Image 1: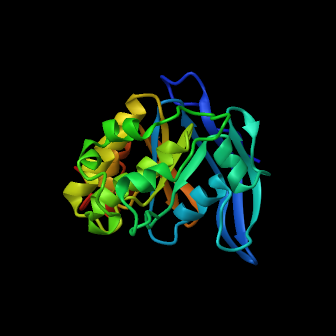
Image 2: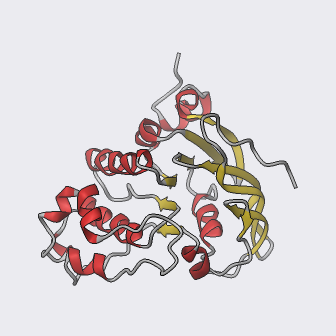
Length: 253
């Protein structure tokens, strides 16, 4: 098992630590020895082509999967190995995933969606009341009594994130929040996420819009065929030739 990456400078310690994380579906390996850290009050983005293992990674952290993968390696939260815990117990410890596809109840109103989630009794993270969610996403307050089926894609994504906040996360995981959204809506949603991080939350973000992710992230990992191909501060990764060529419209000079 490889050594853990050092916590990023400016963070007291890593909240999430992955060491040698491997995921296999039968004879097929989806992740190969991934090391990754997320610090306190840090937004870490994960980029990569389709099939690179991004969703497999966040599902392994959250303890959720559609299949029955063989998972090895270490998942630590606050220094405690949580890799053997089922998904609901990881949620209770503060690992909260917003999966791709948002997962809101479109037949219910915004407020009904938010009220469906009750923070754990011994919440690991900050308890967000419904009013706190509206403070983060003022746009939702004006739509509190509207059914989610009438909302824009960006607003539904805000509801999905608001529901996750109600679960009192220590680590919020967002899997492809930009899917189906116009670029300007993506940037709006991610700006709100950045504000949450500045307010004390830690976020692990899988995002297909790498340009938008780099605008808000502190660090970025590039996954290539289930392995970490590169990682570093967002300000440096903008100039990485592989990322510039594949995601930013060509090589930077």
